[in-house]
Every structure is written in structure tokens, then in C-alpha cells.
Image (cartoon, rainbow, N blue to C red):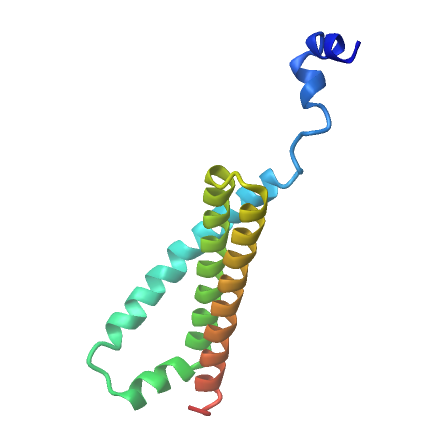
Length: 132
């Protein structure tokens, strides 16, 4: 009876309970928000870096230490690494099908992005406080 019952299951019955995790829209919105933020922050960053071409160490650290620049650099780091993590997450979800490898790769990507963000923020804060 169990095998015969499976033959009469509709695709909806098979899929029920296996639906979305209700994170798709949230993920999509944050991907777009970080992309829009990066349009402005990356433009600012490019202008900032080009303005420092040929500058010595003291001039460069003084430019980073200005409060507006330090805040913009931290915002750029957060937006860029968050956007990168979201993008790589989608790629991994699409192409990594082994459950353990999928979980481990997602954790590794998130760990690397958080570690890079913390290191970058720490560096900017040290420069802004004049400790470097």
C-alpha cells in the first residue's frame, strides 16, 4: 500500500513542507541594498585612493584618520564584505549539493568575511586613533 500511495501523490503533496525558508526576499533585499550602497561607497573609495597616489605614509594615514574618511572606509568595508558574502552564498547554494560540504563552505565564507571585516575595521580605527 505504501508504494501505491506514492504513485498517487501530486507534486504539491510531495513539495509541501519542503518550501522556502522564508529568507529569499530578505536575502534579495540586502543584496540590492548593499549593491546600491557600494555604488556610492566604491565611487568615493576610488576617488579617495586616486587622490592618495604618490602620497607618503604620513599623508595617507592623516587622510584615513579624518573622521569622515574613517567612517566611509568602515562603511565601505562592511558593505563590500557583506555583499560578497551574500553573493558567494548564492553561488554555493546553487552549485554545492553535498549537505556537509554546503554547510562547511557557507560557514567558511561567512567566517572569512567577518574576519576580514573585523581586521579592516580594526586597522581603520587604529589609524584614526593615531596608534599606527
